[in-house]
Amino acid sequence: MNTSTISRVMATLVVAALTLTACGSSEGSSGGDGPMAGQEITIGVFSGWEEGIAASYLWGHIFEQAGAEVSYQTAEAGPTYAGVAQGQLDLNFDAWLPATHESYWKEYGDDLEDLGTWFDNAPLTIAVNKDAPIQSLSELKAHADEFGNRIVGIEPGAGLTQITKDQVIPQYGLNTMKLVESSTTAMLAELKSATESGENIAVTLWRPHWAYSAFPIRDLKDPKNALGDPEEIHAFGTKGFSEEYPEAAKWIKNFEMTDTQLSSLEELMFNQNHGNKNEQSVEQWLKDNPGFVKQVTDGALP
Image (tube, rainbow, N blue to C red; front, top):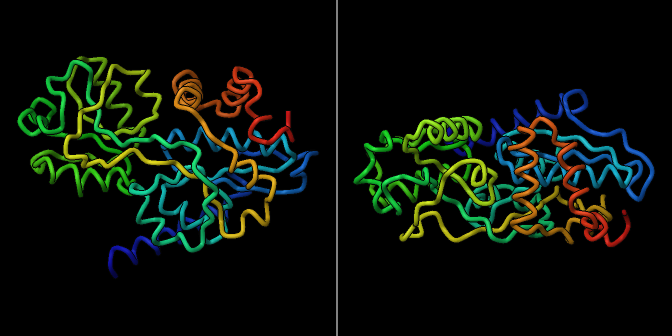
């Protein structure tokens, strides 16, 4: 069995498991009155991808205001794409295109509906502590030992991980450095520890991310453009989403966030509230951003 087949089988198994547990394990509302009353939406959320978590809970709140019953299912990107394509999940807000999720889009795109771009300047990065001795990825090889010969990465299945392995490491001759594949949570824990203790560290990261305001870090220059151009973040639904949820689809197509808006929501949700009060964080953010819901829903909701 080749790697691609194994990946598809594992994704199917995980999606099946998520489907069996969906009713009992997800946060969500019981619905109410409004233009989406009686509708149920399950949002697939990528584990550890803060911008997607933030957008998911923001829209979950909006759908609940409109009367829908909302639940969330968290998994890595592959199983989530499979779940949306197979119809076990309705929606996701975190497709990084054209490069990071290119392989998922090729595999599942025929069974997905692109609901549009909501953030259009999202670069992948290799970040280091602000007082690191280098400014560019082209210098990292010569200073590898000062970083413990490690680049601290995120989930093995993440597109950023694959791009770092396939593009960054070979183009900059970093084969002697170990790419630590773990999780976003583990990477951030190492980043926090290193910056607090004054150690050098190199991590795979992306913008926007609350880590840039929480820790003294900066991006390394990428003169070879190995990480690619800044990407777009898209929302996507299962095929036929617009027909089943016309109000939601129309509103999502109005959805855009500025860097300031998204960074402030992430800061509140993950830095101040440590990812433990997502719904309360959204409510507070909306109080600080009056008119946002009215704007994206064309006045259908206050």
